Image 1 (cartoon, rainbow, N blue to C red):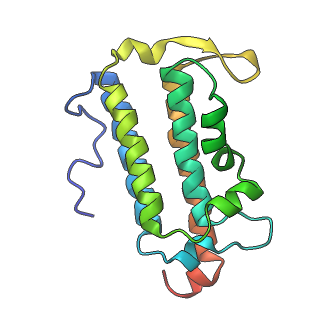
Image 2 (image 1 turned 45 degrees about the vertical axis):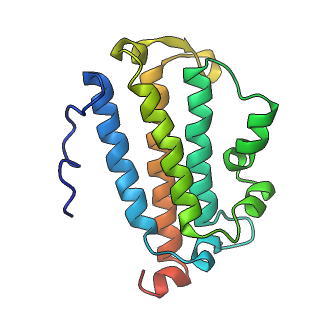
Length: 179
């Protein structure tokens, strides 16, 4: 697995101590996601187990949209505006708009988008003190949540959908092709 310090939750250059731990977990999560989709073709990225199912491409688009949504929500302390909603809404909802938007795209399209969004996340993390992660606000159902939980949820969401990607590959012609 030649991943260097990938398996260490430890200090990361440019990040505070607590941010380093979060970034360590986010890096490993992304590494496993990238391994799961490595080498997939457009046909494989677009494949759906049934008519209502998500494709791997849709799930990758969702991962990027969720992270972008949390950038706006936590860094800017607001909901997405109309223009932003138009851009990330399909990826968030994973409905028919997502089926259209995330179809016919090569793997590089998704990888470049995920990398750019993550670059923006990490650049902002580097400007914030660790204490920012503990800032609380009302969240789901009005329950208090801190920024640490919100960003934990971003990586939790990615892990969950990475699991779906593995299932799609296992129970489809992608899995049958030995990938």
